[in-house]
Length: 65
Image 1: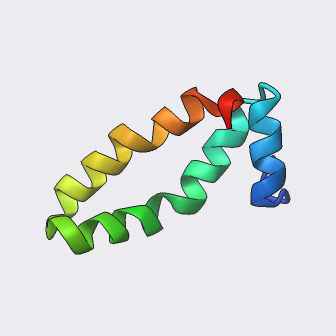
Image 2: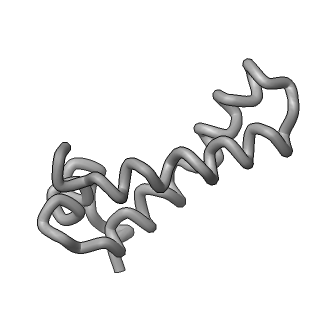
Image 3: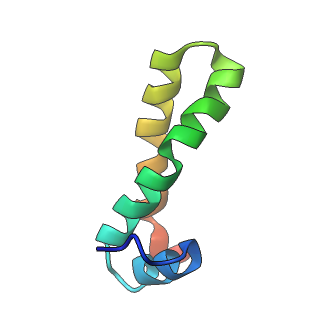
C-alpha cells in the first residue's frame, strides 16, 4: 500500500497519524540497520535484537519529528 511513497512522504504520513507508514519504513531499513549494528556488535542475533527494540521507538514518537 505504501511502497510507492518516498521516504519523505512516508514520514509526513506517519506524522499525520498513519501508523502503517512506519511499517514500510521499517521494512525498507531493517536489514541495512542490522548490518550497520553488526559491524559494531559482531553478532547477528544481538544486532537483530537491538534493531527490533530500538527502531519502533522512532515510530512511536513520529509526531515529534
